Length: 137
Image (cartoon, rainbow, N blue to C red; front, side, top):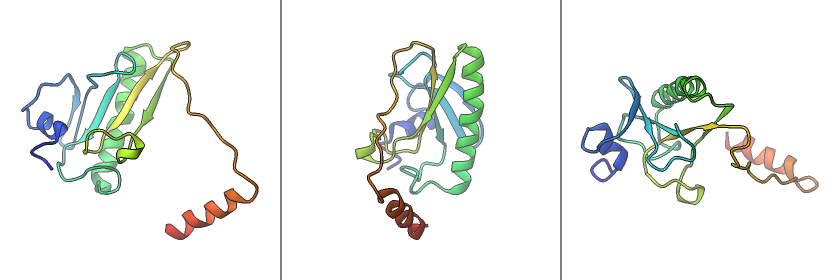
């Protein structure tokens, strides 16, 4: 996985990036196709995981802490009215690069970016789903 992973190449310095933050466990850099100016990707430096399903708890904690730091910096530096923090996991959820990464996206009043469409549960459906999730935990 590590040889072909674009983010692994960025970690190793084989590809350029616009780094905004780096520590021993994480790296944050500007997305090359931003949703808004300042859109930053936060990744663990470990090159062994593909997504949230196989990232280690330690790497996940470090990555989310870096995302929190970046969110504060984006709000201040970009004068953002808010931020979206999101992660796509696996192809059908929109994941394009097989390396865990969190998107930190500055948002602005009137920026035209919409929210996800919401739906209501059918009668009794929420209870059934709640039980399925609880039994999987």
